[in-house]
Amino acid sequence: MGRILIVDDEPHTRRVLALNLRQDQHEVAECAGVQEARKALVAEDFDVVLTDQKMPDGDGLQVLATAIEANPTVSVVIITAFATVDLAVESMRQGAFDFITKPFQPEVVRAAVSRACERTRLRRENVLLKDIVVHLEGSPEIYGSSAAMQAVRELIGRVAPTNVTVLITGETGTGKELVARAIHKNSPRAAKPFVAVNCAAFTETLLESELFGHEKGAFTGAHQYRQGLFEAAHQGTLFLDEVAEMSPAAQAKLLRVVTDGQVVRVGSTQPRKVDVRLLAATHRDLAQRVSEGLFRQDLYYRLAVVPIAIPPLRERREDIATLSELFLRQTALELKLPKRTIIPQAIEKLKRYDFPGNVRELQNLIERASILSSGSELGAENFPVPLSSDRSGAQGGSPGAPSVPLADVLPEVNDLRNFLAEVEKTLILRTLKSTNGAQAEAARRLGISRSDLGYKIAKYGISDPEQ
Ligand SMILES: Nc1ncnc2c1ncn2[C@@H]1O[C@H](COP(=O)(O)OP(=O)(O)OP(=O)(O)O)[C@@H](O)[C@H]1O
Ligand SMILES: [Mg+2]
Image (cartoon, rainbow, N blue to C red; front, side, top):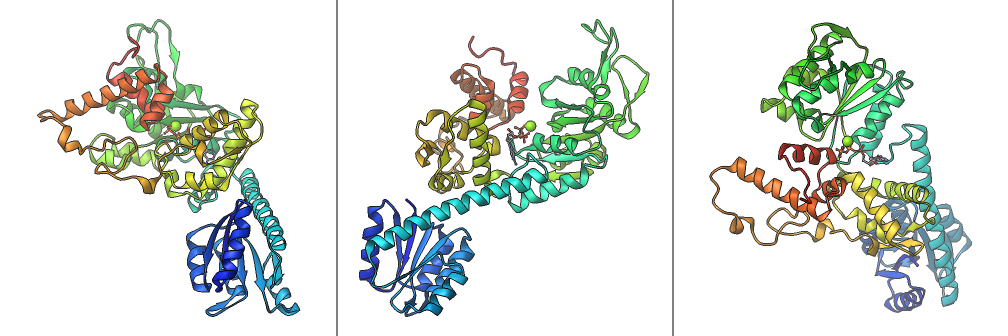
């Protein structure tokens, strides 16, 4: 079954065609002329277009041209009472899939439309596969054919062979770590270590000893000397994730390493030379943090020599089909599930969702749907997500936002900072309770990164939510 557009100026013919096609469970839309068809084709994706040749405001070949321009994988069938060999040849040359003469036998049309649907399906699959192959050749693991992702891959290709510091920015789950790993993999340092450190996961002093190492007795509990991650990443790449969360003291030390390539362990004065390529990432606007005085400007310039900004998934919805296909195959392989397909309506639904958790959220949705569904196809009902155009409400429509205006339910506040912290802590605790303490799931539900949640848990001193 597919989505079919019938274009014919005679209402009777349209009715007969529609009746017949609906018997095969196709979804049918009708247009009475070329102009109307143009609008429909631009607004919606059809699998098959069934068009009359001669109409008062134009002809079937014009519909054919518009249909292919709007969607190159569509299959167009032309029906005409004025069949000539010339017209048949010309329509095929311009990309029509089939050509039927009036008066037609309903079975002939039904069979032609079934074949056309199948051909469209195969062509779409092919486009996806080609897309995947192209990416395997470039930066293997980074999928998506949107202009934005092509630009990201191109940038990776350019910076990978060099030693420049790259600042990767993007919302949670957009693929920042993936990009960092791709840069390392494609660099001359690929055979040396890639060390990732999440700056949000440590307290101030721990982060310093983690990064730069410490001498025996440098602080209480430092019974042994310890090599830092800079030394561990010698000749390789060090990835500073959530770099915006670094304390001022750690920032100052980091600046020293970046400027003179030397680390000094905590509790020592002895500088050690290290050869490390730095990559950094943050989900925050680091320039903004600089202007707020929370991040050192000199360090910012050192880190953001080449910035790579990964746009949120909702700003590159054309990547959703390719990524869904990829995660579907990955999930099937990893979990040894039977091979499934996602029907186009489900993809259409996903394309209308805003994905606050970006690519990671899409990955989770596909995984969950694969596990929970028993059929061979994943349909729209397997993805229970709110659609962006369905959202409403005074709070800007964030998922789960209350329908009562916030102003009506909030108390008088005389200490905003504390109040907001209390609200944040309460929501985190509530979510952790509902996930039985599972932090990854809680982070996903809250639409924040796992590391951000870890950071907040430490900040609020939340220990075990079960207690
Ligand atoms: N373009 C892509 N192609 C294939 N997989 C992707 C792509 N982008 C993201 N992913 C996958 O999505 C998941 C999230 O990516 P990643 O961990 O790199 O995001 P992140 O930006 O570092 O997130 P966070 O801010 O939460 O740390 C990973 O499993 C990653 O492999
Ligand atoms: Mg990350």
